[in-house]
Each structure stands twice: as structure tokens, then as C-alpha cells.
Image: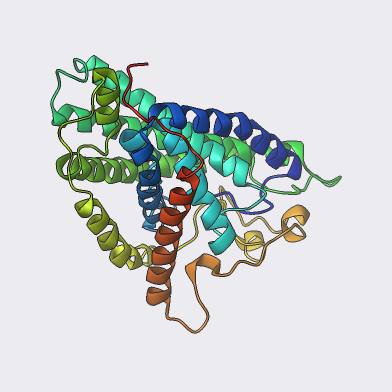
Length: 350
């Protein structure tokens, strides 16, 4: 779902980036109000889960690949506003260091994966918790069902948004001969190509990823859940039950070691072909037969570790090292980000 460089027009990228600015401002403000000071650095843990989840590629319907994002998961741990910030930082790190997603398309990628996914996913989680009887009266099993439903809906709506962003490009931006300047596939191709694999496979993967990790955190570190944080705030006193965070960091270490499993999925994610291969790629019919000029001649950034590779290092080891570097940087970044953020000094019911 990472939109690469030059698949969207500069105008589209500008609009999507501008749309995200008030979202980021709102998210930072609300995190300051909602989370205790000691929880803010731990948002890096949620960002690490998202970063690692996006490294586990799985084969999708149609011969492409996809991955979990973890937007709803982070919302369940720290709230949707914290999830917006966490996924945004993870996406920025992926784009700048690994070339996974475009720099110009950063706003669009954040709109889909850091805005639509966590807010919609968490909203549906709350809706189904309420339908099941309310947060205080239902058991863990029903909460996990609500989490699965919310995360499934969230990632599928995010995929639909990405499909629309892809699909409007050839309608709005083309040359005199009718050839697309950027993404060449219109809505009739982009929407089914993005949504069917997510409905069939990627959404299920997202739900499983969310439920498994959320259940683990509820069991081992119950204070690292947004339900516990909200209950603490409303009760006007610190939570009595606090779990160790060691198991959570141990889970992150296990996931890092397992990331090479993501290399087993062959093929390229839909809409992420390079300029050199798109002309020969068939999507919705015969091969395209040309390379859109905006895609071929557009701006690009030479990143340090393209596609999670390193010169002179084997593919598997490079993938693991990329995971270590990404997780370490996210933990450090959120520790630094938390310094100027105020958070809540004391529990309050506001």
C-alpha cells in the first residue's frame, strides 16, 4: 500500500500533504492531553510493531504482495491520535532510509495508513464493543473480536483510498495522446486491483496481526492498552495493575529475528513497480506498453538501504539489520519526541 515516488502528480501530493497537516496538529495536541508523560516514549513500541508488520510481506490474490500495517493495533494500545503519529513516523523512516514509499507521496501514504486506518479501525472497535455490551461488561474474547473487525475494516478502507488516489491520476493528468503522466491505471482497474486482495487476504492478515499482539499485550502488560489508560483517567487515580514491559520488548526481538520470512513472498506490491518494469507489467489486461513520462523522469531520492538491502551483506542478514536499525531509531525518536511533549502530570477525569 506504500505509494512510490512519481505515481501521484505533484499537485496530488501537495493536496494530500496539506490535508495531513491539521491531522498531525490535532493528534499531537490530543496525545498531550490524553497520555501520561511516562506513556509517551512508549508510543515508539507501537511504531516498532507497525514498522515490523510492514516488513512481513505475504502473497496476495493476483500475484502481488501485501502486509499488515498495525494502525488499529497502535490505536488499541495508545489511542488513535498516538497511532497517527506512530505510523506517520514509521512511514517517514521507511521512505527516507529504505525507499519504501515516496517522499513526495508521504502525505498520501500517511492519509491512508496513519489517518484512515487507525481512526476508522478504532472507531469500529469502539462501536462493536458497545454493541457487545460495553467495555466494562464484556470479556477479552469479545474485545478481540471487535479488534479484528475494526482492523479489517480499517485497512480495507485505507486500501480503497489508495486505489482512488491511484485511479484518478490518468483521468486528471495525461498528455495530448491520452497517455498517463503518472499512475496509468484508472479507477476501473485500480479499485478492484487494490481492494480485492485486501478483502481476501491482507485484511485477514491485519486482523490476525492486531488480535495476536493485542491479546499478548493485554496478558503481559495490561497498562499498555488504551482501555486501561482511559479507565485510569476516568477513575482519577493511577492504575493498580501494571505488567512488566519486558515481554513486549521480547516479542519485538522475536519479530525482528523472524522478519526474513517476509522475503519468501515473491512479486511486487500492486502499484509499486519501478519505471523500468511498468511498461511490461500487465494489470487488468495486456501489458501497458509505455512508461508514463512523469514516472520515468520524476524526482527520486538515493536512500541508504534501498529495499532493506546493504552492499556486501546477504539478503537475510540485511533484512534483519534493517529491522534492528528501524526499531532502534523509532524507540530513540519517540524518546526524543516525548521530551518537549507535556503529557498529563497527574490523572484527571477531563
